Image (cartoon, rainbow, N blue to C red):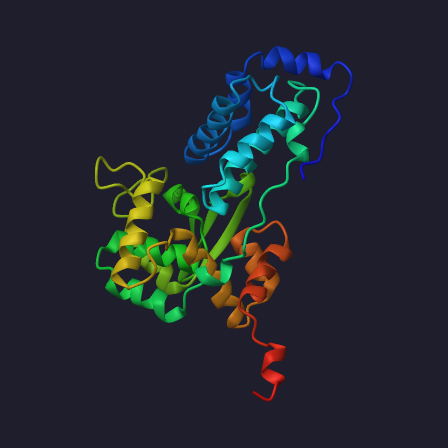
Length: 292
């Protein structure tokens, strides 16, 4: 449940002047998010407001509950994503004084099955993906997503000044989720494959370039590269770039990496987040002690 935040007296009036319409409120709410996130969130809240037929300031809990019921034909994950976006907007509206109350706080999201274990592929599967990829840029992208545990947006945003040599290998500086910066040390082989892409590129040019015009590879292109590689390797149609990040975490922990190190490499806020990989693929179970 989203926690309501009290606005000091007088702050609401200032916020009201800053967001006088729903469109202004939504723009403020989406500020700083990636383009892909903005598109998805904007579509979700527009869907809600079109259903309610009201402005944000006039919607009620009944409107929100009826909207949630109208999504019953969607997959639980889709319902949860849409309702999470709406709840986030309503929370933001209350925090900034646009509305006096956060009506979204009372709406419960549908409970979802944890499918993390289904999204962790074996080391052999990752190696097969890499072995079947013959394009140097695409191979380096796949390898880096797995070796560094990057989000696809983090890989696409890399430019050459983000790479620093360290002896025979090096490290990358990643600007990640939540505006946090972290450094990830790479192996000699991964570093060599990555730097082989540079050619005469300057420090501010992208590491992964689109074939059209040399601009940075965008996330949709990276998705297509990963999904094509997964298909060649015979993996699930639902395979996404994030599965390589899941594989990094699980395989590193299986091989004895300290959980705190995996946490810092992936940029998780809490070690509890990293610990989910241990629960998804436990090494022990009481079932092994039964006589059957």
